[in-house]
Amino acid sequence: MQIAQIGIALRTAFARHLVYKRVAAELAAHTDRQLADFGLARRDIPAFARQAAGKAAAGKAVGATPAAARQPHLHVVHAG
Figure 1 (cartoon, rainbow, N blue to C red):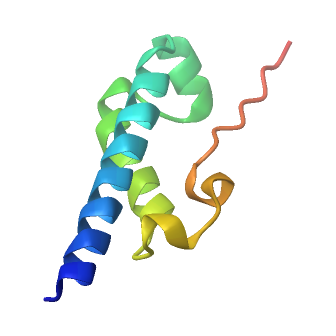
Figure 2 (figure 1 turned 90 degrees about the vertical axis):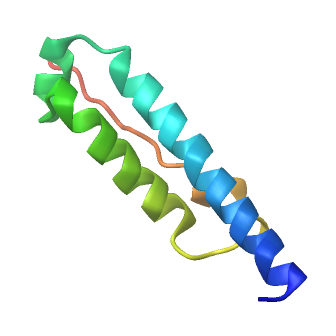
């Protein structure tokens, strides 16, 4: 593995880690009722965050896509 490839792998892993932390923290801030409205249970948060992180970095270098394309967004519609 060349130095450039190692750098890309490190940046990608770090980007995935940041997405995981952000998604997990955002979901953890919701109540159990809100999570249920999203179709999630609290125990599902780590798996959901891993999935979001994997999709966000999907084998691409961190600098290869615009920031908006790398960041998953949770769109929540509150019934009211």
